[in-house]
Structures are given as structure tokens and as C-alpha cells.
Length: 217
Figure 1 (cartoon, rainbow, N blue to C red):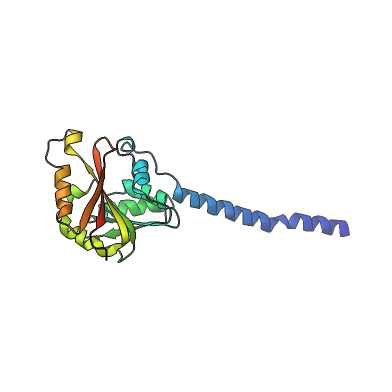
Figure 2 (cartoon, helix red, strand yellow; figure 1 turned 120 degrees about the vertical axis):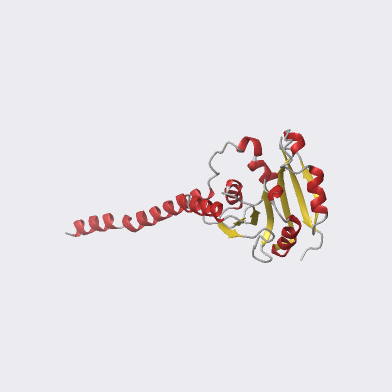
């Protein structure tokens, strides 16, 4: 009987350990799914989101706002880049695109994205919360860019960077007049509360405009 008792104890002991290991593995898998690199998209080769993130200085733990997020193409790249300790506020004026982001985030176990319904002149981000802001292929669509930038300012932390990615009609060969020339973007920024720090031109068809606030809040 004593031998049987020892055998029973040996069989029972691993159970809590196995349960704990299973929980750790499950948590790890869930965490990895939230940090997995975004699924491939035909735009990746043209717009190089990974390189844009690297060049602009996105780091794990950052809190970032995206204005004009649409259905979230760039949003999920930002989510992956800032990781579990960071957060993305994805803004748009159309609820349908934000609903797409919410659904995909739920499907992929992504927990660091919060959608924000804004207006044409106010992104409605939390005050004093953002390390960076991105506007990807959206600036030419803004009805009131000067007012929008003014209302963005209170949401930024001191020294925050704003990045505008816009298709260059000259370099891309577009003559429709839909996209803004480099001169027009610079002129618009010049009338705002921001100043243009530099322009990155490593993308074939797009420019990256790097902005800082003239008088940080």
C-alpha cells in the first residue's frame, strides 16, 4: 500500500505544473498573435511600411495617433511596431472603416488599437497623450487641414513628431490634380501651427513630410 501511495503521488504531482505550462504557452501564443507582423498586402512593396516605421523612429511602447486610418492598412503596422506596451489611436471621420479595424483587431487578438471617430477639423485624440502622429495617404483629402492641425496640437506630448505620407504627383506621373505637390504641402504646413523639419524621398512615388510644433503646448 505504501508503494502504491507513492506511485499515486508521483502521478498527481505533475498536473499543476502541466496546467501552469499550458497557461503560459496559451498566453504566449495570444501575445504573439497581437505582435505578429501584419499580413502581406499588395501595397507593401510600393509603400514599404516597415521602412517608413524605421526611418521615422517608431519604437516599442510609444503611443501613436493615426489620422485618416481608413480600414487600417498602416494601423496594424504601427500596432506591431509599438508592441504590447504601446497603443495606437486610429482616427477617421467614417465609422465604416473604423468598424473594419475593430473587427480585424478582434479576429487577430490585437489589443493595443483604439478607434476614434473624429470630425473634418478635429481628430479628437486624448489630450497630451501622443508621442507621434501619422497621416498616410490622407492629407490631400482633408477639407480643413489648417484647423485639423491646430486641433491636433493639444494631443501631443512635448517634442512629438507628426509624419505626413503623400503621393508626389510629379514623381508618380499623376496629372489628375487629385494629389498635392511638394510645394503645396509645404505651403499648407507653413500656414499651420507646425513647421516642416525635413522631407524623406526614399519611396518611389511618395514623400514623407516630418513636422514639429512651432510652439509645443
